[in-house]
Length: 538
Image (cartoon, rainbow, N blue to C red; front, side):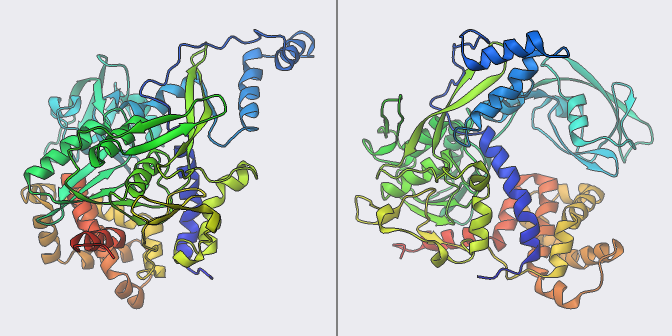
C-alpha cells in the first residue's frame, strides 16, 4: 500500500525513536523492589575483560581511566544480548527511576519556554509553588538572583536550576501581568507526585474513561481511586486507555488486572532459562468485576500494558480496541552496582494466560528490532488490518473459543486505523511548526481570568465557539507566514478547531479539559464507546 501522508512520515521516525528510548528505560521488572542487594566488583575474576583492562592500564602509551574503559565495555557486552538488557550510569539512574517511583524532588510547576522566557503553565495542587503563591501565567525571570529570561537556555537547563533535594530552597523572581514590580518568592523544594492516571471522567451517563500513561508505584492506588469516584457517578462501562503506555512495574499492571478478573483466573506467567516458572492469579477482590470494559492499545503500548491487555483478552473479560501493540515481553531484573550504576538484565519472558509470548522477534539484531514499527507503517499495518500476516501456528484459543494471536504484541479484537481524513498541507504545517500549541498557550494566557471563571470544559468549549476561535487561529497562522489555503483550512477545520479548543482547555483546567474535548475526534475512543453501548459487541 502506498502512503502519501508526508506529515506522518516526518513525525513517525522521531516518535519511534522516543518510544524506543522510553521502552528501554521503563521496561517491566519482576517485582515492586527492583534493587538487588548484589554488588558488582570490577576485576574480581580472572576473565578476559579484566585481563585486557589491566593490561591497558599498565601498558598503554598514555594514562587512561579504567572506569572509562569499563563504562564503554559493559554496554558493548549488553548489545550482544537482547534489546532490553541495558546499563544505566550512576548519574542517570535517579532520573530514570523517577517516573516509576511516582515522585521527584522539586518545586511543583509545569512550565513552557516561550521566546526565551519560562512561563508557568500550571502549579501542582498542594505543591511548594502553589503554597507560596506562584500562579499560572507567571514569568520566571530570575532563579537564585540569576537572570534566566532572554537567555538561550533549554528546558533541561531550567529543570536543573529548579530541581533539588527536598527541604532545600530556591528563590525566583516573577513577572506577573497584574504587577509592574518584580515579585520575589522563596520556594522550599518538596516531594512532587508524578501521576500515572492522567485523567478519569464520565463520558456519558453510563460510560467512564481512565487514561494510564505508565505503571508506577502509585498507579494501582490511583486507578482504584478513579474507579471508586466513577462508581459514585453511576459508571457501568469503562474505557481503559493504555495507548502510548510503554510499561513500568509488573505488579501495578497485574494488580489492576486483578480488579477485573474472577478469582483463580491466570493473569500472566514468566519463565526463563534460570528463572523458574512464576504464575500470577487473580484474587477475589475485583472492584471492577461488574464493569464492561474496553481496553485501548496502539503500537506504542508495551510491556506492562500488553500484560494487562492480554489478561483481559485471554480471559474473555473485555474487548481490545485499536492497533497491534509494540511486542515487548522480556522480564528485566535490576541490580545496583558498586559505583551507583545499575544493570537491567533480561532473565525471563512474559506469557499471556493462553500461552502467547508477548515478545516480538529480535534475532536479526537491534537495528532491525528498533525499525520494526517503521516497517509496520510502510507495510500499511496502521491503515489496514488485512496487511498483517498472521500464521496459523500463532493461533491460540480463549476459554470461550475466541481466536487470539501470538508472535509479538497484542492483536486488538477491533482494529482502528490511523485517521488521515483530515490531512492537508495546511494541517501538516500548523502541526509541525507547533502553531496550534503556541496559539492555545497565548490565548489562554491572555484570557485566563475569563476562562477560569467558566469552570468546566463544556463551558470553555462553548465560550470559544461563540467567539469564533477557529477564525482567530487562522488569523494567527497567517500572521506567522502560513499561506492562504482555502481547501486545506476547510478539510482540516474539525481536527484543528478541536485541537485548539482542547489545548486551551488544558492550559486552564489541565487534562480534565483536554481529554473530553480531544475525544470528539478520537476514532479509537469513539469506536470503543460504540462497542460498549451494544448489548453484545459484534
